[in-house]
Amino acid sequence: MHLLSDHIVIAHRGTTYWAPEETEAAMRWARNIGADYLELDLQRTNDGYLIALHDESLLRTTNIRDIFPDRCDQPVSSFTYLELLKLDAGSWFNVNNLERGRSSYSGLEILLLEDIANIAKGKRIKRDVSGKRVFESLNNGKLIPQYEKDPADTGHRPGLYIETKIPELFPGIEEELNNELIRLGWYNEQPENLPIVETLVDKVAVANSPNRVILQTFSKESLKKLNRLFGHKVPICFLIWRGDTEYDLPNDTIKTFTEWVQYGKDNGAVIIGPSIAGLPNDYVDLLTPAHMKSIKSMGLYVHAYSFDTWQQMLTYTKLENSDRVDGMFTNRAEDAIAFYRKYYGRNTNHDPDAIATLNKLGY
Image 1 (tube, rainbow, N blue to C red):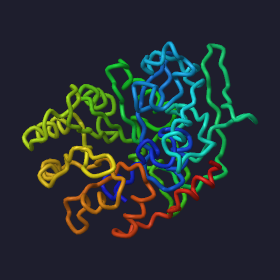
Image 2 (image 1 turned 60 degrees about the vertical axis):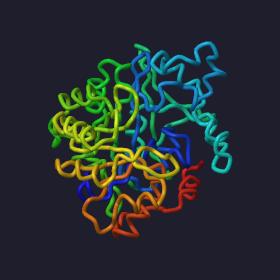
Image 3 (image 1 turned 45 degrees about the vertical axis):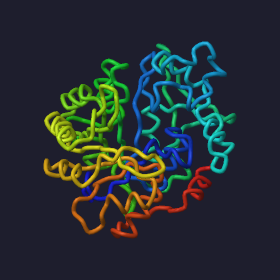
Image 4 (image 1 turned 90 degrees about the vertical axis):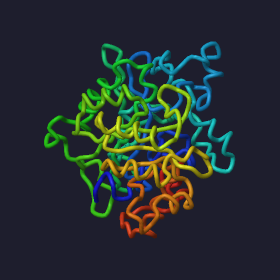
């Protein structure tokens, strides 16, 4: 399996469809269903912990209004990790998704990068009898999270697909990411010195591969920093979105798009991540045949976002056509895996029943 091009299934925020995004439930589900990568958005707390959260604001995915009503409009970066642990990052999902909500989602926490790195290796967060997280506390006040073997683990070992999110709010986060991946055993300038992750035959084994980590960003400046720090030792994806901010493609003409793709290539990207059209997200289509040709002509891979229906998968893989996506960001990893099994004969064992997987995990 070529880990950048052979039908890669990237579990977007773990899942946003079956569980509260970027929580333990979402990440354990994505691992057990057989996704190749656990995707996360990297931000930093006020006291320096690297966490997984998509929004700069805490309003959409936590009960911040109830816990810190006077600070509810403040960004994530203004809160300490202990303050964030007071928030419920799961109950909102139950309110917004009545048919998919579960009482066990209530009280789920915002995760650390370290949490997801351990989940990818078959562990779960260690908790006391009341369900609260267990930490070791060092003399300097640093909290050391505790983990245990996950009894529901199915043996898949996915990689990590990490986005530097709103990096201008977090000066130096690229260097901190580099240091943390080294500490956690997920990156080393000498790849032969990386610890071996035990894997099983016919299970996902990306966590023990040379491309166990992929980095991604919408930011041109962050792209340059990631390239400087990681070079070609870690694949980098340059994400592209049409919009109105400094990070966004100002228009979707092929000329402008090609300029952005060229910038990505010139600054270390080996993957381009464009948006695709179609429900339920209805994003701008930055992967028309002409856009695809622009990327492929430069010898780059395509990991597009986000595939949530079989119709989208059929449209952009083109089956017999060589100009296809190489990887899919998806909120429904079980569907992407089943699609690849049906049309491409991919034979990685997985449990196609998303609900059964959640049940096995205890949610």
